[in-house]
Image (cartoon, rainbow, N blue to C red; front, top):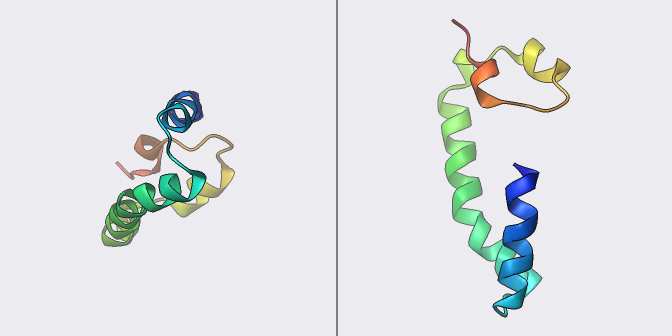
Length: 63
């Protein structure tokens, strides 16, 4: 994900976004992500999550 966020951040700065504005714009996404994570907490294998160095949400879901 960092491969996409870094160029996007640079582009936003060139468009005149301040760091504070970038944080503000990310808050709804963060709230949605956290809500969905909480809603699906029982489906997560936390032991797998803690061992992963580069998390991938698809690996968190129990089969």
